[in-house]
Length: 243
Image (cartoon, rainbow, N blue to C red; front, side):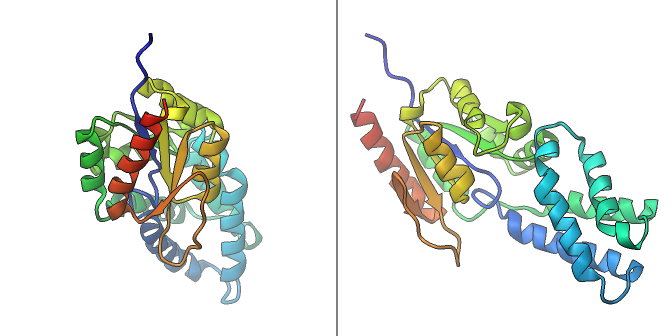
């Protein structure tokens, strides 16, 4: 009889383990200050619509490695400013530095080390699955000690797909030598993490709700990260008992 594979937990990175949104808000403030002197007083709303619209349409290209980070940043700023002129090399470099500072500003959410430590002590295999360029996401994990705290980090660039595509989940499961039914996924995005996990056949999903987000459930449990280690261990015990 073949021994069952290890139990595993896959964590999202941005806004699950780290405070990405607050760091990104500071980036937006910095970009605003840099760009405003180069535009008419009534043009900033239009700039942000074009800047954020470009992100929505093209982030998959850089997240999967089909475009370099430098080329993507240059293209985004050029597109956003197109109705009013071209960005100077100095402005482009300054805006790119703002993005670099976001990766340098992120910090772990409270309780992350305790959650990871509890799970590791229980013999659970740990992974991180994250959308974003490998160079940026891996650097965050290394700086914050997450790369050493888990067994694998899978970026969308590694998989050539972005969450919620099942390829991202399955690559991590393969690296952890475990099966979907013996895994729990934890993330803050309902679409990318929770529904993506369920569509990939993962046994359960935990939705981490930040203040102001609606409560939702789907084959899993709700929780705030500082308390979720207990819930995860209970859920994993249920999964273990069912195999």
